[in-house]
Amino acid sequence: MLTERISEALREATAALGADGARFRLDRPRDASHGDLATNVAMALAGRLGRSPREIARDLRQRLAGIEGVERIEIAGPGFLNFFLGAAAVGGTVKTILGRGDRYGRNDDGCGRRVMVEFVSANPTGPLHLGHGRQAALGDAIASLLEWSGWTVHREFYFNDAGGQIRRLAISVWARYQQLLGHGASVPEDGYQGEYVSEIAADLIERQGRKYEDDGGDEALDAMRRFAVALLRREQEQDLAAFNVRFDEYYPETRLYSDGLVASTIGKLRETGLTYREDGALWLRTSAFGDQKDRVMVKSDGSPTYFLPDVAYHMNKWERGFHDVINVQGSDHHSTVDRVRAGLQALDRPSGYPEYVLHQMVTVERGGEEVRFSKRAGSYTTLADLVAEVGADVARYFFLMRRPEAHLTFDLDLALDQSDRNPVYKVQYAHARLCRLFKLAGEKGWLAGHETLRSADTSLLADRSEREVVKQLAEFPALLRRAAAGRAPHLVCDYLEKTAGMVNSWYQTGHPTRNPKLSALVEDPGLRAVRLALARAARTVLRNGLTVLGLAAPQRMVRED
RNA sequence: GUCCCCGUAGCUCAGAUGGAUAGAGCGACUGCCUCCUAAGCAGUAGGCCCCAGGUUCGAGUCCUGGCGGGGACACCA
Image 1 (tube, rainbow, N blue to C red):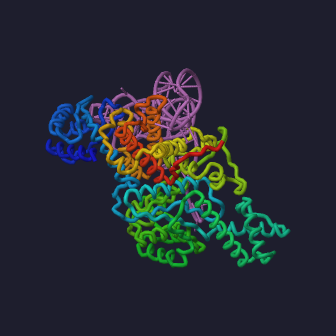
Image 2 (cartoon, protein in one colour):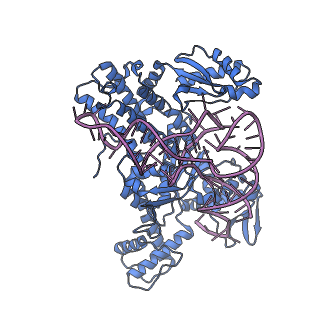
Image 3 (tube, chains in turn blue, green):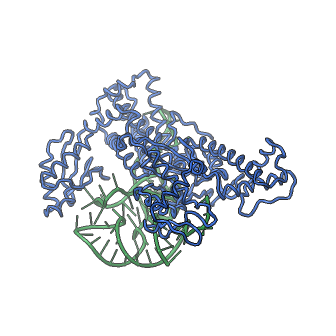
């Protein structure tokens, strides 16, 4: 593309000035009077070359003369070089988009290498809550961005199906079970109080009768555990399916034990000589790798802490061939980051392994008031309730539109609003509107097929509103690259909203009631073809962007009144 | 006490490795439908980018120190 050509020319020109490998920016200025592209390279080099920026700029301008597609270059301000592109160059973007179609925006930075994204990883102790929802949306979108960047992505869900929390769940189910059969038992204070626990108990009675009545033994508790875990796992999967999130693999913690990985990890850590005994427990010198203090691996009662299976699990990921791993977790887990990495460094894994994306918590507001409702879970709002109320697309978009590290306030009033205030509908509607153009063109018997559009004379895209849209569309690939590299899906949301706004503006400018001459569906076949080509290009970008985020790109919007 | 994140318009938030006059949406105000979906568009108003220093041609962005908000600091998971 033209940006790359200019960038390459700049690298050559700066090298000729004796400053090879110069770092500079080449991007689209906010102000159109500053050209279509601008670079700060002259200023960046001033110090290094000991010359004034404007003098360097003048020199560079001479060396850059004659780049195909560049109409003229101006020097402005402290030493910016502003590039003004010819109409043909702008039109070339449209052809590129039409040619690439649903692949427009993809790149091959990952070269097919494998990367694992682990996310949600909820324990099967209850329905998924909003934090899991944010994580599901984030993890899936990051995974998708990496796929668009040429990576082979593996989506993994880890769950803890043993341990203390699960034991408390089993005890809670057992208590409800006894209650339902008319016995006096109560859920312990640190147990699970939600209504769903009673549902599980009732379900168990229905399936297996009074088998465990008054039986508080290990066998009964184990049966409760297995039954509850299986049921809750299934329910979580349904919730995720309704949210359009799927995983390649579900990894249970118990497998780490049954496969002997925890035991072998203890052995390997001991061999490093970084372990020691104190107060009857086995410690690892994680402070040697930047952790704030040393950590216990095996408690004095002989059982491992959570830290140990975590290290074992990440060694297992590595051995499965995943040397690039991104864990999406709530920021309440941030204290585990240093210690897990320290444990892995003790075993000679690189210091940045694995990578973490930590996100802040979610609160829901309705009418400006925080809501903590839940029919079944008791103390928190479930993902299933939210999706049922606002729909998967709206929920996903809202979870994604803020940077992960910022707190997210989910505005239910806005989410339920089907008007232009709701950014999801704004973007989807812009897409549907463009689809409508093609439907109408077909009804009028006008050809708007692929070949007609591809052979359109793009030099006819002369209006400012048209050029602005094209320049916006041209930035999509770079935007996706930046979003993938920064694990930042919210950038895609921003971009889509802005693009939708510009598409709407363009569409409105050419609305028959306003300015029939700029309408897409004009009588002139040449103009019509090129404007429909632009519409198709814009539609492609909106659809690809929505697809990256895991959202539908509807051909038609139906409002529920 | 230590560590991490956040602090930008009335509200919710964007601001790529430091760049030109700090942006968007919502809310407020003013216009625009006999006509491709007005779920829209055009325009107006609204800012000591938390504070104080520092780095430099240039700081919302980087450094130091404060202030305010959130989170984490177990032989819990």
